[in-house]
Length: 184
Image 1 (tube, rainbow, N blue to C red):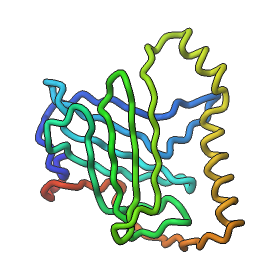
Image 2 (cartoon, helix red, strand yellow):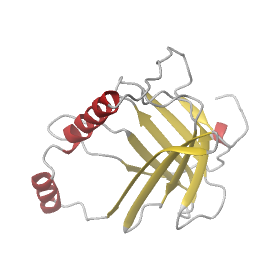
Image 3 (cartoon, rainbow, N blue to C red):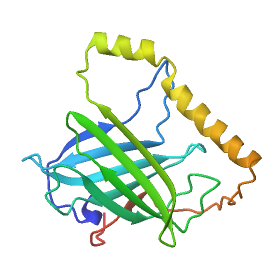
Image 4 (cartoon, one colour):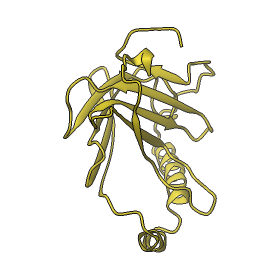
């Protein structure tokens, strides 16, 4: 966190991710909202997972007193899709945890948007009844996510999309953006 320029010593951290269902979990993106003691946002950690079992975290400080929507940008540093090169910039637009959740991500190459993904929903109290109802209405949610990723990839291959070779590069598991470099 210090490498990203964050100063707070004590943070409250809230995690937004998909649940593990029947022992299986896959989160393409987990978002950690890091807040100061007064509740104001200090940083957001975007933990990205690919289907190769790898993960990478982008630690981005929140510079303004953002309470409604937070917009952050950074260069892409992690191979996620065989259809997207590494010369992308990533943009994140998120609403801090509240009654509604909104997350959108866009990837740009040469200032042209090449991919956009978004999610929105309403917050519910975490009770046994809500968990049972959610499981009944979405019984295989995490399985559906991974199956959907592979199904979409197959459709893209059949349509003739160019596959970007995956380079085996050793990289930091965490990219701190926006701050000064300090020794951990």
